[in-house]
Length: 113
Length: 120
Image (cartoon, rainbow over all chains, first blue to last red):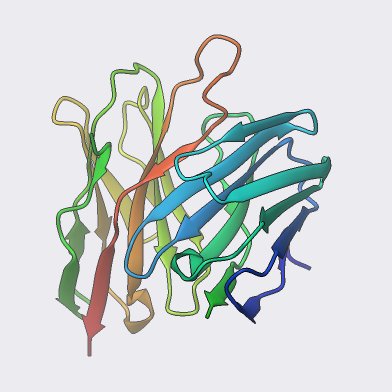
């Protein structure tokens, strides 16, 4: 089983709809992140969380919200989806040790029509 | 200001040859880490190699090595003996040092990536 699981893997929806992307992890990491990747570009940080009581905005948080329901679960919501939010979304976790990489889920491909 | 710069949008290499993917970075922190990830066409992010700012030796992981030049703020990835399966997008990323109270949270800043194509 994957250490970081994202659901759904693919989603097509319409403008104005509310969308929730879910992430769960079995690595026991406190730190979790949501990134967005636009075609042909690098990843940009949307939100990150140090623990269940700690939520922080990243570079591109407008139009998004998150919920850290438990140490293992971190959800990303698009309250009213718009076409330019069409992208590949990644959840990641990390250990506090600075030499450890972030562990990524397989991504959610989101298309907003 | 861009913190991670990958100047090569695309690179081509012949199978079994070596290739270097460039990465330069900008930070005022003394403690930071540099990472390389591979993203095949299927989309997942695969961790390849890590270099800490205080590491005296260049990191190596199998066919991957990191040419770390701290004074020049560069962290180039070298792939030796390229294989067809190496064709993918490659990202350089930086994690800056933990500030007081751990405020950096281990956030990664990514470059825009380099698409590597390996020819048979």
